[in-house]
Image (cartoon, rainbow, N blue to C red):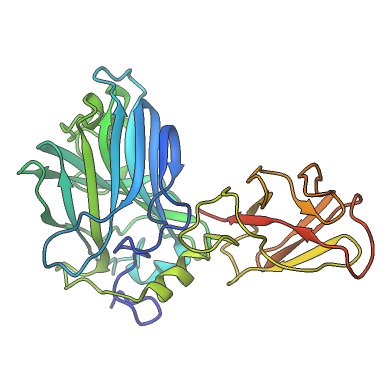
Length: 347
């Protein structure tokens, strides 16, 4: 039970091996960055850096972790401020949970965590399709020390998940918040979701000092009431799965918007066609970057004299690729357009 394509773990990139966007700094609003598929929810609660870190549990077999580090503190969050970490899942990948039926399955979440300070943070399963929630608290018992945690959540006999590519269920970790997210009670059984319950068990106050950080790795989510050994996968497998949600033409290990060599190639009649490495979850948002300056929304051409003053006139995008055309581009066998791209279809 609980396999996706023969796999036990429903989490993609739980070992934090893939980080296509690179590390990010100075973040005051919700953002991806560091390891793929994990999404920092930041709402007016401090400033943060997010990175793929090499700090991992000794002897665990992991090489990377997701690190969230405070760079500007907020010790007195306003009522609506909050800091969370999300992992979002498509409904069509969760049908084996049998949610909304009398046979609904329990699920177990396991992970390694290291935090600068001790305290509690709340972990929720949030059913986006039916606005339902269940949660529990996790205690960081020893500061600055890797600890292994396992949590089991009961199945929910109410509210079936959509059998589609939408954001049906997300795992949510609440690290800090104002009273709008903390004045209720921990939802220890499935209930109609209310914001005041989402962080009611959190005492960690992760945003109250620039000394604070939070690392996590080895995230596994599986059907059943027991955590099994972590299911390690190859970097190639994880990268391919991540590219359903985000992909780029930059080499792996090269940050988006870097000044870097061209993606390819020669194109006639001012048009360039791109095929994504895999079909994406949905039609993505595409960003075009100059290979000369890294500027967003620009491309280079042999007709532009090495400048980046050209814009694409038309971009036609599908879930399998896109084409870009410029009316400024010279026509002929030796004409070319040079760019890098990102394509984002995250939940």
